[in-house]
Length: 318
Ligand code: SF4
Image 1: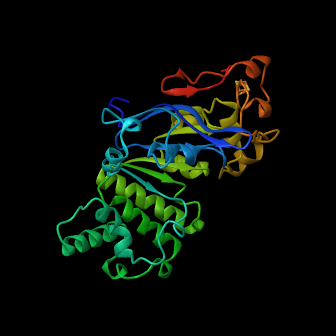
Image 2: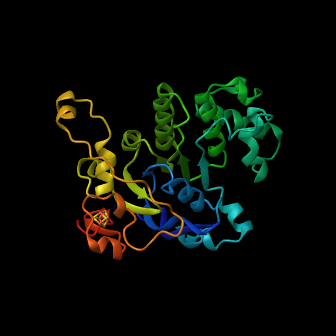
Image 3: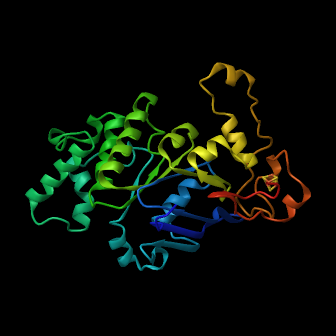
């Protein structure tokens, strides 16, 4: 990548105090996100990907690490400074049913960020901006005075997207934005996100467990397991040449539309359970489920290293 990163995340950690110790939801992840790209973050539920997204926008306070955005370490900002910086950082949530206040009109929902940041001169400017935003996401001005329950799931997610765009952000974290929607609607929302990215020059982090959709939308993809990044590469490279044993197992479970290839393909079954992220032990977090594990894997945590051009892997044997 030639451009300077828009986001540089370094050694980000988010631990929670729980009965019995520390839950290490995110345990030292590092990556860059470049302007106008989509960075996909995938993994099974409980791997820490949503916590990573929420920590980046400081909905959760980080335990450690740096997040450099436009030369500024976002994690060092005071609450007041962070509120200002949040104009550039927005989030689209998984559940469009839960993330919209049922007692507010669509106009008030979409205008909420404008209200918080006093981003208009008068009421008519506020209404005009809301209508502009609704049109941008494929809705129209007649929808402004309605309430969330009057809309379908896909339309509600469009309202959530309009709200996220209100302050003209540069960077949007899409946290499983389609997993609560019907399959028939998912592609429409993903296509809308792609169109908006093109039109507005947006940069996305797209968090998901559906690996096929992540491939479709992402330029590069990171694979998380138990709070750690296991592999990161350009999307085509990761899907055609997965290196980490965990990525290979995840990808082997995706059906291939060609029946000949699908018939002869071997699915790699993951042995054992996902271990608890509370007080994890030393060594590779994947060791109990890895068919290639050697003694070293139990003693030493593998470094996340660039094994070939722009292809990072954390594994002792590759
Ligand atoms: Fe498997 Fe060892 Fe590699 Fe971990 S470091 S993925 S246990 S081979």
